[in-house]
Image (tube, rainbow, N blue to C red; front, top):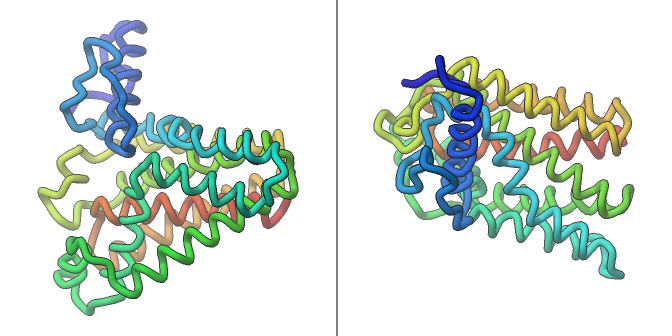
Length: 275
């Protein structure tokens, strides 16, 4: 695999071009946005190479959060109830990603808690049908996210709440990169393994960007709130890693999606708990 950003011997201009191409590839991979070809380095038909591009995942998370944040900003300036505004913002965010990570969360909960062996768990996770466990997890996670975004909107103005939502989504993608880096593939040949495993350096850069996003939240919330969010994020990453190892022996794309979903809820909980 090629090196992390920038590649050895690559000019600064080449490094920027590659970074833009990697960001575009991540946006296509994690969303339904019609991202055009950004430069000659970019191949819209190719899968992202996360062994190199993992560091841009928090940036992609921030970009993907912008439509929902914009809805929060605009609708929050109206007389609409805070919960209605939050539902609209969360709904737009789900539409942007096509519910990709929400689907992963449902599959993981169905598989991890619906069977007694790793083989059967992986089989359930691969099944496109959703079970009772997955349905309940999906409903509860969306309700919790709506409630937390509502709380942010009610405690702060629309603009600060929108900023916090972007910070939370960026930080959650850093957790995804970290979990991906430290876990082996549970299903060799799966989509996550085909895209390459993030290198330790790439995961560390993603963590730095995600941590920076949480620190940026200090512009809105007390330092204690940002530190609580950071602590819960680290706890989430460790918990998902341990659970995935115990249940299936590694990661799948569904595990990574579930990690993102639990992480964003953890961050929002931290921002609300100490605010």
